[in-house]
Length: 305
Image (cartoon, rainbow, N blue to C red; front, side, top):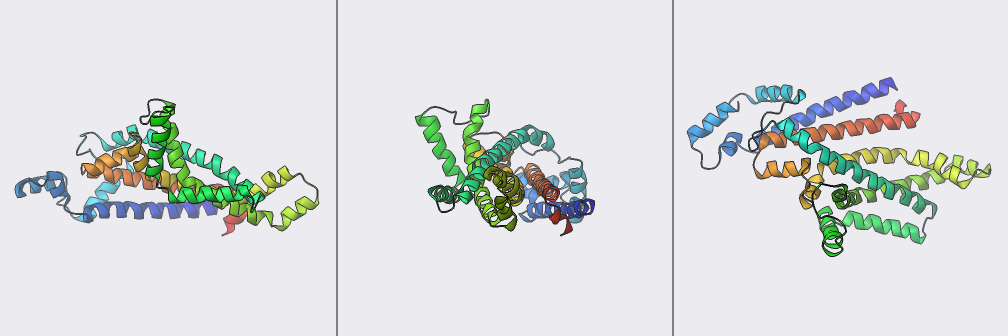
């Protein structure tokens, strides 16, 4: 297990370095940062002053090394627009995004896993067809359209829930449903497929021949093995939801990390954009690493690969 964990950690470190390099280069290759910071009406002298002020006149390798060294220390500089430390801005917005992503993933798992299990047990029944219909609709509907539909129905017409804001827990219900439904189809279909494969295995037939109860067979033996790929998928989906929360946070006016990214893009606030992309990428890598290690603990066969 230790050797497996060390291999996965080494891969995660290599991926993290590659992502940080790509994040740095993509921003610098997008155009002249000094011109963008100074503004379209700035003179050549003002642009040169900005270039020297922010160290953009140094070689690119030196800039990357300096930026990476400070990034490791969580020092991303100051925001061009907000005039505040970038890490402080992110620290104030990240809890909203983490709460939204965590609750959305919990909603997706609570809905998708039981639905996938029942769909596999009742294969080709109306429940199975209903589950597949939910999956198709979830994949076809854009999250922003679904979010706006929820606002129209539950906030405007029925007046049951607030349309925006995070002042109370009720304000999270609609965005959690809108974001969680995005991950539900993939988790449900993978659970259904895994259960169908496991239910056709020899050890399940042996368990039935021994006269074990159906509940014991389904949840103790079948679901335990079928859930392994779902754990990895859930980690990936959480990373996607954290990174893709920009649209949902904008629709529901939740001032989280996604909304901060939208503000930074609209105002050319490059240090904030760089930091958000890097931090979300690191969170995604850590989630994937955690899912790999958890799968290895559940299924020892994974450790020898």
